Length: 430
Image (cartoon, rainbow, N blue to C red; front, side, top):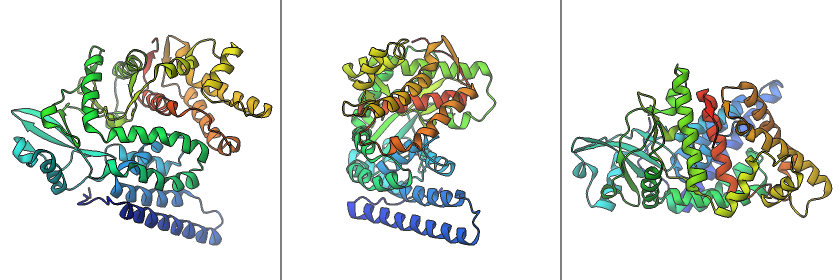
């Protein structure tokens, strides 16, 4: 895998990279329409692949917030064509890593010495690399460790990266600019927290300690003495990333066990701790040989304000769609419906969100739910695809939903997707 020996860190350098990428995308469109003039039946698949490759290659060099947005977009099966999903999903744990000299430089800045002087052994090549940082394996006094190093300049470039990625997101993926502006503030806040490894260390130790009692879940021990603002050291959990295991033949009993562990993990955090691991993609979980679920990344945590919790989880209550007064009050509090909406808009958007709440809440309306149910997910994805192309949503002058919900919605979407890929049968009682 190609390694980078530098990352563009200044606004000018990063802006230049975005401009170059934009020019490549323009060239891809010209090439596509040129072929279309010769052969009117040319599909857009090649265009999507060319654009996805150019965007991913560019963001891989930039790292940070822009690449993280690509990773987040890859989780939405309705938003992006397949070529983008497949390319952007690589940002979860197989992005091109930094070269070893840059890793040494980071250690020298925070510890005054290189990793080889701190640990008994330290791999010169990253074992995996994602959007914000990469992981190396180390050994100290016979104990195997995972050492996560943040890419240089990531924290300083989050705001400017999100501003520069906006035109691509709005134009290519036809996102609503009003909703983008509403929700990107929440995304920016979480990303800035992800660049604070001191915060991640505290949260990792606290949340893993409070959740350790749950069955079939395994957490690493963390080491503050070998951690800093940009370096995080923890136990190495033996196993393989969930993404690798999903495609294998796994006994149904083990699929159900892993799925139940995931379900219990998320709902204990949501409803008891009011703080949730909000980055449920396969790269953040390790599956051990005995099918335990290893939780290895608390970088993205959504703390749920008490007042918002009370409103949001009314959506899962049995009578929220039959008690019309309660439904309308909840929809307005969550800004699905606005006071300024016309009668026609109220009727239209109420219908949309009634269907969405019914679909997403369906697993909660029975004691057990089979996430292998293709009919359910076909209906869910079909409705999601319909929403992604709906003119009324794209051109709405008001954001439909509140920023506070972004990461809870994302968490449920990621959780459902993983459980479906696991084909797990779950006891949904929470």
